[in-house]
Image 1 (cartoon, helix red, strand yellow):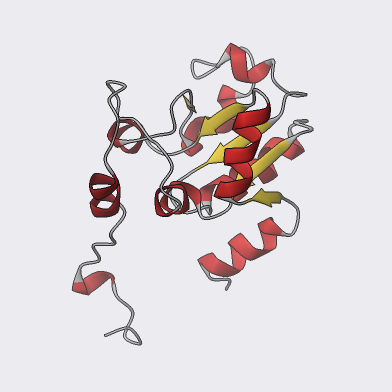
Image 2 (tube, helix red, strand yellow):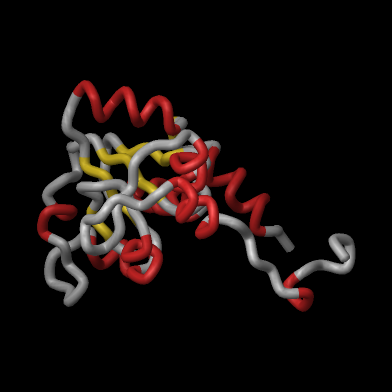
Length: 155
């Protein structure tokens, strides 16, 4: 049996990752597609302005025509530079891996995800396009594990 972190590490071997400061530089230099694979409620709370939200759970069908989840802009972006974003950089690694298998040639994962983006004090907006404060971001990204969610080693 493999643990989650082991699966992420295996997928990361096949995926290029960039850090928040790399993304900041890229955004100053050129236009890229920002693909946020978090759930809609997470995206609504905060995201990098200009991001496209396609939840990880429907990514494969969003990347192809002829499905209810099809996102034409994404289907037609197989050769575009795409930065895939999630909360902490794990789902984005899995998303990049599957997108590469589906023929996407220039996808990278944001290592540390939006949590790292917030720690690097970069701007985000909420679902209404209003700026999210650093305090709001810090509060949002603070883990809230219930006792029953902790392993016996962590208690």
